[in-house]
Length: 210
Image 1 (cartoon, rainbow, N blue to C red):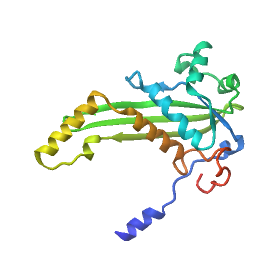
Image 2: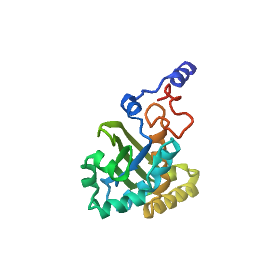
Image 3: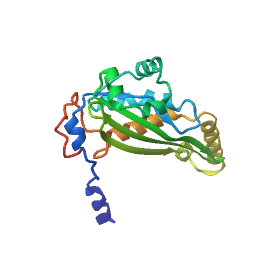
């Protein structure tokens, strides 16, 4: 058992190819309206409210998402599918951005089963160059959360507590913390997320991790 655990602990993460991203060296990121495959009409707004911070914390300037959304609506690009089909170079030029982040909400739902409500969020990301239009980084992240599983399961009281928590989650799923966590992991995951940007002290120093 110790040998197995030791092997798991020393296993190196599978790294993405960051050569295109490092060569392009973007300093600023434009997050465009997200395409949502969820029936939850609030999902795109929840996503946008939680994606800016992790990218900024990695050392990139991120354009204010609400301002971007409004400018695009005024420019006749209110439809997210239309935006995703546009040339990233045109979008970047509109704001003076170095790179454009496209995101798709693949899943954003809750499944209720009396004693358990599992809330699942799944995202796809693609960062494209504002200079060449080339794809610099792609990633997919998925996370499921079951608040009832964290409750005590002792006897009838435990079952009642689980049922209450599951019912509350069904009535109003708490997507914001989950979306924030998913975005944070996607952007910061070693060997898979975004390497440190120019406003991070680890810029060009973290190449062994990314």
